[in-house]
Length: 107
Image: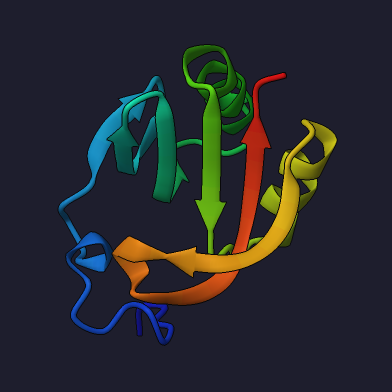
């Protein structure tokens, strides 16, 4: 049974099989608005190769604001915290609701 949460119902970004290649070894969904990126979902195709860390670092180089809403992975939370992301509770338009969001802003 696939994972589901309260934001998944009726949300096209949670449909299986429709993820795009985001970076080397990474697939998922990204929304870019101006110089801000929201990562709705992402998966590393091979764990333990550093793909997720490189992807996060590349996002920080490319965008002024990077957000990860509604995380369900404790390991990813730690990776984001170590890279300067701050956790806030806020409204996320694509999810049509409030949730915890990890946010990084370029200084």
